Length: 222
View 1 (spheres, helix red, strand yellow):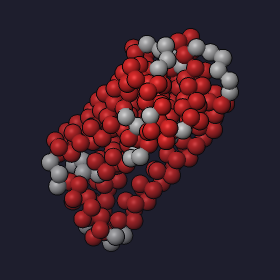
View 2 (view 1 turned 90 degrees about the vertical axis):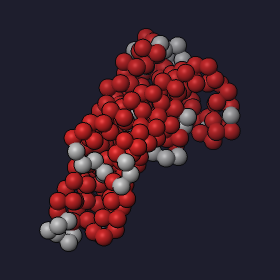
View 3 (view 1 turned 30 degrees about the vertical axis):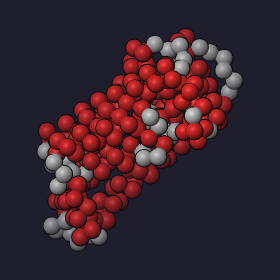
């Protein structure tokens, strides 16, 4: 286990820090703008990049890149929804998403407004659909940003912190414990399990707003 993790972490760390940080930011931007997040979760991108963090400067640079990438991607998603939303929904990719998911995103936004924007950052599928859906709604861009900025900041800090802490702990313990690799894997697995559980509980709690008839305007809710 230790040998495999050494190879994996060293491979990621061998990438130039500036390039690695840039790629993470671009990956998150694509995830939140053009539905890439439905195929490659941003969680994976950020955790892999964060395992190579070795200095405070790299940590803060990665957090900043993830936040800026997420906000840029969501801004692009908003613009695409505003100008091409119906065409994207009718496209082959939009049809693969499914009318059910589009309808849930619309109902959720209509009933919860800004709260839907904030919460969707932590929900599967919806985190990729909401920016486009907001663009197709009457919600103003500044209202959208006011709700999505804090969500992106919280999300970025959580994932970068866990990934970098787990990798840092492994590097220290691997010199002393032959089973240090299992500790690293355990930290990541427990964190991801808590994330999955949290998403399920959050989605279950919010389901009544996603599946109920639309009875509110997103601007009024916001």
